[in-house]
Image (tube, rainbow, N blue to C red; front, side, top):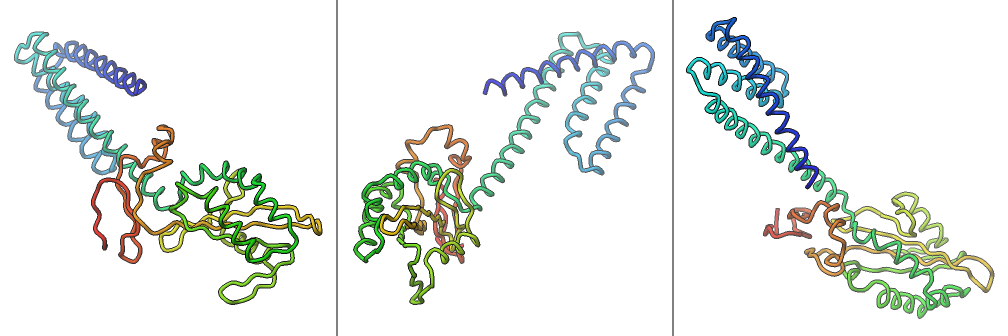
Length: 309
């Protein structure tokens, strides 16, 4: 980037100024001290820096310390053996090139390690940032869907109403990208009961309220919440409120999304997303895989992961 280039130029200018300063100091004190004493002093300083860096564990001070001490030794030996200013400059540039290369490699390596940590943490959260991006738009579409509104304004629901709501959501709102999720829907009146695993619950609203209070992490500006993951499957839950014309009470539509266990690939609409968003997700250049009980349940990227771990 432009900022990186400017930073690199600034570092080079700083190093050049230090080189000129070291050269000036060496020429100034050369007449006052014997070259052997200067070399011995620099070697002692180098040893002290190395020991201090190893004891403190601050390895970052070792590279610049070695660099400046080597520069000093080079200057002293240049005076000792009568190097011309041009030869001395060539040697200094060569040393500066080595130092800059080592420093850039080390910096890039550290940055790469930090990026991988961020990616690992992001993958470990078991969330779908693309789905969460689309929830706000989907929320508005469902709330304003007249077919859904007509059904949800009733005072009593039948099995065919449940089927119609599911078909509308499946075929109209949760298609394409959303096919990687299993869809479940429930519609309830304020006083409706609910059957879960062959057991009847007293109140539909109360059951789902308890579920959301115990597990949900609400998403901003949408009726959907994140319920965590089970066996590697990402879970989202949506609640939508509708007015009941028959008794002026409230009806609710509950939507649950569970990601399917399968290999993941980039497809529509990920291919149409803004490149900056993909970059922010920090995963486009990495391969990753998820295992559950030693079995591969999903993967992305080009690396061929084994089916068992």
